[in-house]
Image 1 (cartoon, helix red, strand yellow):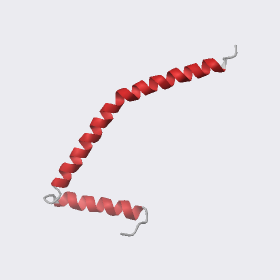
Image 2 (cartoon, rainbow, N blue to C red):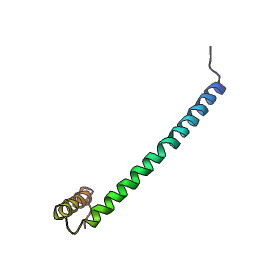
Image 3 (cartoon, rainbow, N blue to C red):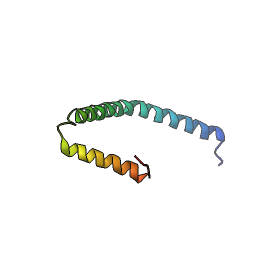
Image 4 (spheres, one colour):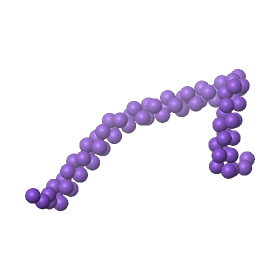
Amino acid sequence: GKISMETVYCSLFILIKLLKQLLAFINPFFEAFNVLKTIKTMVMLLNFERNKKFRSLLLLNIERRFYGRNYVI
């Protein structure tokens, strides 16, 4: 038979609720990952003066990013 709109809306509502719960569960992992990435970046910046190779790679990356989008520095 024909599926009523009410059934469709109920199914969607349940799906959205489940997705929200899943996101609430996953979110802390993402937050932790972002914190780790930030710490890693800070450590890299602290070693910036000592690490010539990293400096040249970073400058190359920045240049590539800007010139790739036709920016002029």
